[in-house]
Amino acid sequence: MTSAPKIGVLALQGDVREHIRALEASGAEATAVRRQEELNAVSALVIPGGESTTMWKLATAFELLEPLRLRIKEGMPAYGSCAGMIMLADRIEGGIDGQQTLGGIDMVVRRNAFGRQVDSFEADLDFASRGPMRAVFIRAPWVESVGPDVEVLGRTEPGDRIVAVRQGPLLATSFHPELTGDARVHSYFVEMVREF
Image 1 (cartoon, rainbow, N blue to C red):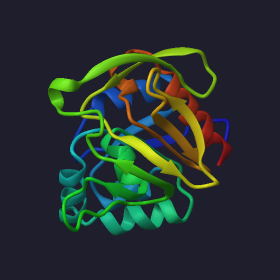
Image 2 (image 1 turned 30 degrees about the horizontal axis):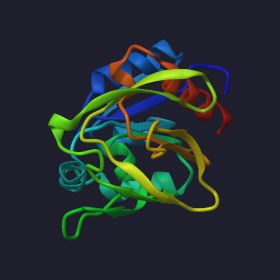
Image 3 (image 1 turned 180 degrees about the vertical axis):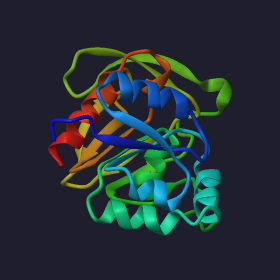
């Protein structure tokens, strides 16, 4: 795919405009997705941060949960940041009773692992061997464990916590790259979309 891929940003909650700007700066055509017909019109999807239980409930209310699961299962590229990472996890720790995810990445993610809102922080890390990058963590999860097909793309230092992963067409980060003005994560995702 050489033309600008059409990538949606799930617009139920979170930094939708910021993700759209970062995707457009990375060479994609970006649009908000709230309905199934909008989901059907995109070739890939960004699932932004927010609150994962609220996102699950809103996706259910908007009748998007099953269509999202189906598109991901069929191989649609997707990128989840923070709560989006939780949504792409096959298993979660610290969720509420009955909490569901979209799944797709063979990993266990711990919700709010780095603490509460007041514990939010910034740190430098190396993402996918692309050099130092400033990462913003807000009530962020971390990855407890990954399956054999999951590639670890970033860890915190110190602490060595897994905060960025990829499995096939799926990408996830604990942090919010849309808040820093550094579009390298979004550019990486756009490259991934072009591969699929």
